[in-house]
Image (tube, rainbow, N blue to C red; front, side, top):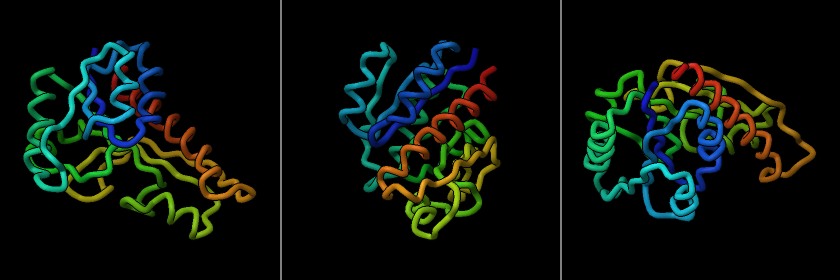
Length: 182
């Protein structure tokens, strides 16, 4: 059995789907949040230890990453799944080399970084893409675990069309989790 940590920022919708899928594998072992949020409160119903990172990523990224590393080491974490809009760095990356997975909302290597969703839509791409990949020191450049795509419904506006991307991200996340832990 693998010990998994989820690092969550934002609403955590994708990771909640992943958490529901992962109950078959009795994981994750811990949930780590960037800040207290509605997602942090909502995840309380799963009876899994939750941690809030005390260090602010914008002010002290190295210390925030060291804090994550300490929590993961305390719980003997094998893999970290990241749904996070901040760059990770330092010992966290080196100690979890090829053990930290990012779920990125584009078909890499195209559309790296934070604006990938907007760029796909407003560059008139035909498909939403999603990539599960290992995190390394470069932005969205680690070894790819799995990728998939779905058509962008151009009859819908930008916000509504993202429902298909959300479902795709859930599917890619579940596939990557299953591939790594089974």
